[in-house]
Image (tube, rainbow, N blue to C red):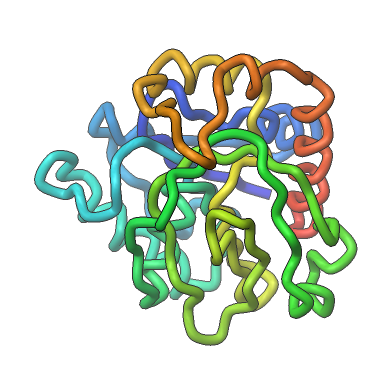
Length: 229
């Protein structure tokens, strides 16, 4: 499989997904949008992965590459590609599918459980995503579920944590690819967001248990397999 990913900042890469994809023998290419790299033709890949970033979907005046990126994502969807969006990537994917992206009632940063929506049971992720999973979050925005999509689940802080459409388009508001190293990089670059709020954990709370990262990385590996990667 030919996998292409979009990266918005230097410190938010594929995380655990990179080893899973390369070890499975898939070809891997990237567009680093913060370097103003040129987007490929959608015919050049089978699976598109859209990573996270601290910007918002409406920040086109600050990050002008967001406008062509949005058109590119829509083209990939319309051409029947498999698409996985993570955090900002999920929000961009939601907007491309006609859903609304808004400020979430709470900033959600750290380890908090997501409860699976019952509707997910009849999908390709029905046996992959647990009924409840403690996952890693870092977001302040959220989205509505696009028409025709299956909601993934919710947390106490955020009603819509993801969606799946046609068993090929998946949006994850949270991070399953995060490793201890990539979490440390997020804290290094976005640590100013770690304020004393109900759903914001400290650096020590986030990095204290390595086995948490191993657990979410296993779920992500299963998800990639379910998408054919």
